[in-house]
Structure formats: structure tokens, C-alpha cells
Image 1 (cartoon, one colour):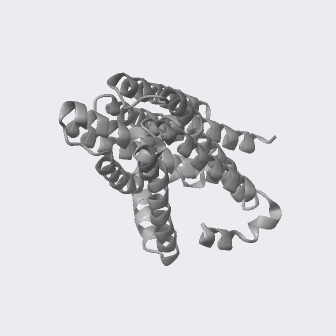
Image 2 (tube, one colour):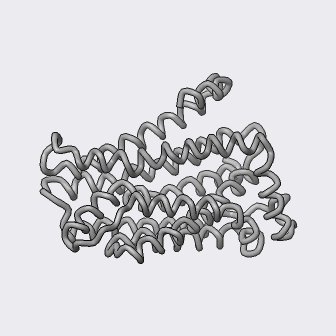
Length: 289
């Protein structure tokens, strides 16, 4: 295995561990919030929180590239992981003002993770290995749906509702796992990029200029649709499963199994695209997806 492929695999593992915590929190967040509201009388929504986070992430992505140039990709990952972990643990005691403020910070943290991820995949790939490496990364990332949600499935089974202790233990575990993944990113080897010598102001101008290109706008439109789809399967759909009375009084523990199955589907889909004959059908697969 060459060094660049090893780097991609380590990236997939470290981000996968980091997002194990995030996916666990995302799938259970609204169910936890509703139980919290009933206990405290507060009126807070994880759906609103994730909306704020997404807007913050979208805006932040335009301005993170200069930060990467100044402090390096590993340090950017580390800061992003810390900010994302801070957002996750806010659900231990999700007071409205604090949660919505941390949603902004969590969104910036996500931008600090995703921008260097794109750069890392780019510098470790060639025209012939780019698609393969992206699939490997996606498999690692979506593996994050499996293990934290396995805990939810077993730990929440048999419970008539989400107690404060269940809330604290679930979010604490998610936060710890996210923090472990954050430290793992420090071992990703940095390979020089052609853009490393650009001034921060030039990177911002390049990003804004690229956004005006019609091809980039098509990608942005597809990314928006992908973001809506990911938001549905990681946050809204699990909440619907947990609120389904037909599944019994302990329906919330099925959030775990539904999120696991979503992860399995994502992993199988990415693995399927590694086949040589499938790569020629990518445009049709994107349309079907």
C-alpha cells in the first residue's frame, strides 16, 4: 500500500471515529430534546439547532481555506473536532440560548473539518485514484453510523421514555468518541498542496470566483440536495422512528437500528461504486440516488 493510500485510509478511520459521536447525537437529538422539554418546561428544538448549524457551516466553508493555509490541515482538523465535540456535549443540558449559540460554533467546526478533508483527498489522489479514494473515505465516514447507534439500540431497549441519566450517558459517550477521533486526525500526514503558497486573501477571492462558475453552481445545487437528504436520514427519519407508537413504548431504541441500517446502505453503495464497470455509470447512479 503506497503512502498516499495509507493517508486516505487513516483519514477515513479518524473522521469515521469522530463522526461516530456526531451521528449518534444527530439521530437521538430531537428525541432527547423532547424528553428534556417535558422535564424542564423549556421549548427548544434540535431541528432549529441543525438548521443554524448548517447555515453556519455553509458560510464558514468560504473562509476556512485561509485558516488551513496559516495553521495547516492537521491543526484545522483538531480545532474543528474540538468545536464539534463542544456542540455534541451541549445536549447534556441543552438550554435554548446555549444550544443555539453552540449550533453556530458547531457549524464552524464542521467547516474546519470538511474543507481540509477536500484538500487532503485532493493532494493524496490522482485523476485515476480520486474516485476510489473518495469511496474509501465515504465508507469510513459512514461506518460512524454503526457503533454509537448500536449502543443506543441496546441501552435504550425496554425504557418507556428517555430519562436524564440515559440522556447524559448517551451524549457523554458520543462526546468522548468524537474527541478520540479528533486526536486521531493529528496523525494524518500532511502532503504539500499547490495552493499552499497562496496568500489567505487570494484563497478567499478564488473561492468566491469559483462560486460564480456555472459548473461550480451545479455542484453547489447537488450539494444542497445532498445536504437535505443527509439531514433527513441522520436527524428527521430517526426521530420519526422513535416517535412511532406502533413500535411500542420503547420505540426510541429503534432509532439505533434504523441509523445502523442507513449506514449499511451508505457503505454498500460506496463499495458498489468501487467496481470498474460501475464507474462508467456514475452519472446515472447520481440521478437515481
